Length: 404
Image (cartoon, rainbow, N blue to C red):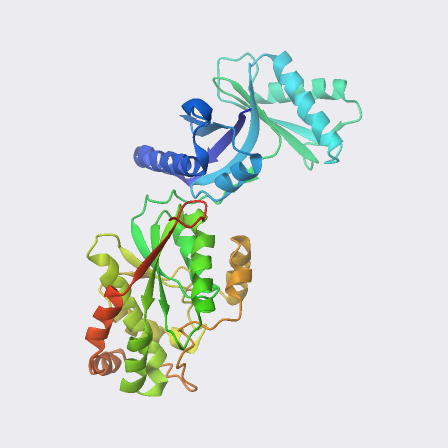
């Protein structure tokens, strides 16, 4: 049996002449998720039908409600959605469905006060929105006298949209809004094993950027568990990103050379510069990158002062986006919990960012001086090339499942 889901867009509706571009990408992303879940019934008949009319998408699908909720709540560009009933526009049909929904709310213990909210897009109808709301409210009260109307603070709201059909629903659930992934270029996320970088990736996906990710591992100094944690984090953010590919880069030789070649106070600073150069090298030649994304927040740690960020910016020619730049740790943690990465991110396995971490890091480096010192590290150029060539790829689909 198919269920009908009414899908609402937010920011996309403000795009005027470019709106069709964003709508097509959103439709493609929803269809991709549906296809990857399971798009066909026995006999090759399509289970899913997605249509678009007047600022709404309508999804008819037989996939379980739990999966439909995951799909729609994790798709950037969707601002809200609801399980809806599509019926004729007569008052009798509207009354029957509204009473049915109200009775369900009573049975579920949601409450006894309600409100009818009507949006009349079909201007040919006899009553206006307020007229329909008043009439339907009176009819529901007549059928269920134990209810009461509360237009200011109701226990539940029955919403009615009068378009080419009538759509009636009770619970409107929030999407994440933003723009559909793929509408704002490509970026590469430097994914550590911590809290910050997966949240940064989520925020850039929400702004429409399609992401790949790079993780740097340093065996034997860091464990296989640390590497596995980063892989699992990539899988956890993949549904928000419409799928993601993680490039796992061996970084031990580069980090050892940096530790030997510069003062201990700037090892973390130069390691980050090398990571950014490797990420740029992997992706820029393939045309799959327009920006690097990091989880850095201004002043959060010693290597994230303005001077340090200025230096690492100068190590690459690609723009560097830092969506967490003004957030404090509590804000970042709240987002990490929201997107489901927090518990994994706090597992106690050190990543390469803690390797050779100086006891007294330099917080106010001179960028020009450090660029000069970085260029003198013996053999680093060749080691970076070897790291690029040694990268291995792990891909996840739009449900976060690892691809074969």
